Length: 165
Image (cartoon, rainbow, N blue to C red; front, top):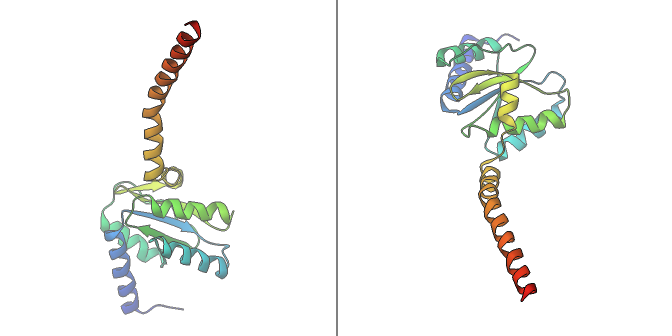
C-alpha cells in the first residue's frame, strides 16, 4: 500500500529524531521473524530502554545521510529494522542476544556507533563488549591479583618460620 507524502514526512521526522537522539543504532534484517517473536523482542527492548522501529529503507537512508555520519552506509537487503538507544552499547547488546536466540530469523546488518557507520562484524564486536559493571569487576580483579599473590607468599613465609621455631 502506498504511503501518502504527508505520512512519509512524519516518518522521516521521526527517523531524524531517532538518529539525533541515539548514541548507537543497529540495522537488523528480520525476514523470517514471526509476529509473536517480533512482539517479544519489542516488549523486551522497551523494558530495557531500547527502541525498535521499522520504516521504508529510502526514508531511513535519507535520515541517516542527512545526519552526516562518517563512513559508508552498510548494505541493507530485505526487510530492515532499526534498533536504537541512548546508551552506546545497549542496542547492539540486546539485539545480539535475540540474534543468538532466534538463530537465522534476525540478523545484524550494521549500524552507527560513535558517529560512524559500522559493518556487521564491527557491530557484532560492539555487542560483545561486556557491561560497565562487568568491566569494573574485571578491573578490580586485575588490580587485586598481584596483591593477593603477595599476601599468599607472605602467609607461606610466616607458616614456614612458625614451623622452624
